[in-house]
Length: 149
Image (cartoon, rainbow, N blue to C red; front, top):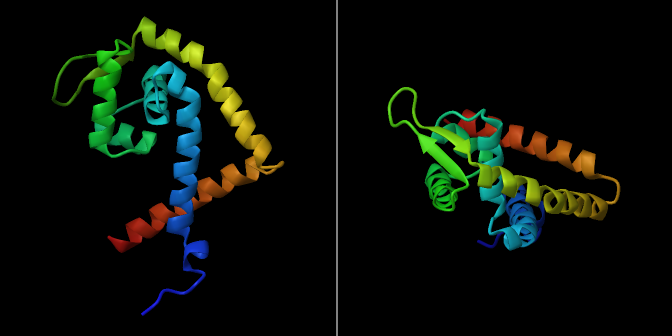
């Protein structure tokens, strides 16, 4: 049986994956001169805010699998951008951005802001609506996922 001709155009899963990959590539390109990708940049920001909990919670916030988060975390630590103390157990490891990490965040903010502005401009006045639609899509997908359990 052949899938319908319009399946790829109307499939939320397909369209959202394509959009996510394109946005990821665009931001990775802007962050490459700093030796970061967008997942690492967001992880650095989450740690800098100090509102992180478990690895699973951080992975959810950053939008990656826990194994990918751990790989990125190790890379940030090896570069001296993040430091961890403590160990396993109820308290878990406490993570903090190092002075070098804080400097890198300050250095990259203009490039990140410019990428945001450039993408918003390409959305021709619909940046806010697009963000709202993305939030609604994420919530709906999470509700669908929970309903399937």
